[in-house]
Image 1 (cartoon, rainbow, N blue to C red):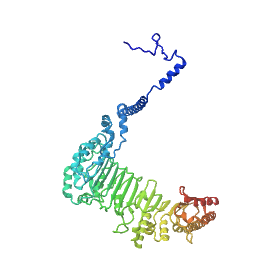
Image 2: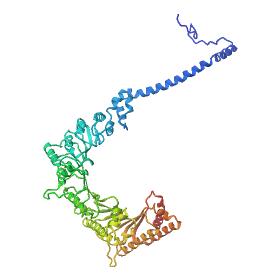
Image 3: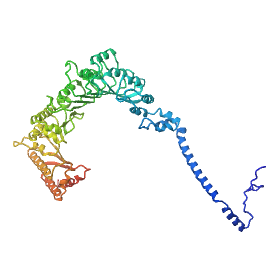
Image 4: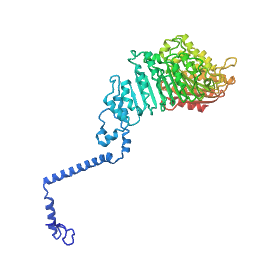
Length: 596
């Protein structure tokens, strides 16, 4: 029997109203009967059905959202997303549990090279583990970088098949494993761009016989000219193999090995470094760390020509060694040269305290500008392509406490010798001091020594003094009774106060500045510009809290401005922005400018 829909007309199939034809009273009664017909159980079941339907809808949305990623997104886009994954542990990579498709894509991600650091052979785990081999195999699907903190022949056997994909390699080896290291470099390494090799600093006293090791290296006949992509190399001088040629090398850092092994001491030779540099015609950066005095080489040998060199840095505890290094090279005049003495003590073992290595360098002799930076960092001398010579003087509490007056005189003597032979055509001199200890070492008699220093620059036109109390320097510029004066061509004088001690110090500096400018003007040397700056007033702020002190400084600067009229053509007062305490002198500067 066919199903019959009684809600529609059998003839026209139109919808039928079940209440059609009934009186209005019966229609209302029928509606009330329908509302009261549902039981409480039916209502509860209906509510539960609606809740489950909403839950199913939510789960379907989550399922569809997740399935769209690994089922519909192209693998190329997923790989770009996965490239940002950086797991923090070696296990439980959660993305690998989403699907097999994701797991297969993760095998090509670059983070496997980062995972190597968790399982790489080390002192506690010297032999390669299964995890290391697994991660290494996955990392080698792409170009990758690798660090080996404990290299050995066993490690070489494990990493050898994957070296063709390495772009950057950092290796730390026991001195006895030099042969294994050179064997590793024979694998080709077509993509290797950066190589760093250092000796272990522990457990190196009981290494192999140096004579036997050098004999083994000579008989092996290693070659290195296949490392065409290598651009950066960081090694000690023991690494340089006879006849080693790296034609594509651009940056070379020759470090000082501190392992103390017999192998390193026997194989380290500055002559080997020079021989290697002769095969590096494209070198652009050369940095030499050498804490030992270099032995003189054959003077008949020509200097190493580094025609493309742009940056040359020498770090040593001996000025004589630095001079020897520089005499060994021929470089263009545009090169930036830096000479630093590290770990030196004044005349401790007969060594020169100051790096006089650049005394006879033509580029330095013609420097237009000289900057002297007094800090607690190091002693550094550099020359840049702009004709600017920069020096950093270093001194600390330990050096000052054990320094005799004779030692201080030697320091200043070396400083004068350096400046005297550098240039006599310098037009700009800047002296920056950030350490009070430097004054104790180099300028124990400031009135005399500053005059001796400034006398080396007769052509000076611009002088900058960045000092705690610039009065020490300024008095040296006063003319003598016969009218003679130092630096008679100075047209610009820049004074920088750095944390003045009191309002009295400001007044004293202003009085000295006024006296110097007035006397030099009377002697025929009128300043074009006098520029003085309050570099920092943060410590000085509590001393100027009283309003009368503030007003005193403002009033004094106003009188100072009036007194300079005629002695100076232009006066500039600056207070750097960014310090709330500088508002004190910023207001005074505005008054000074208005008065001028």
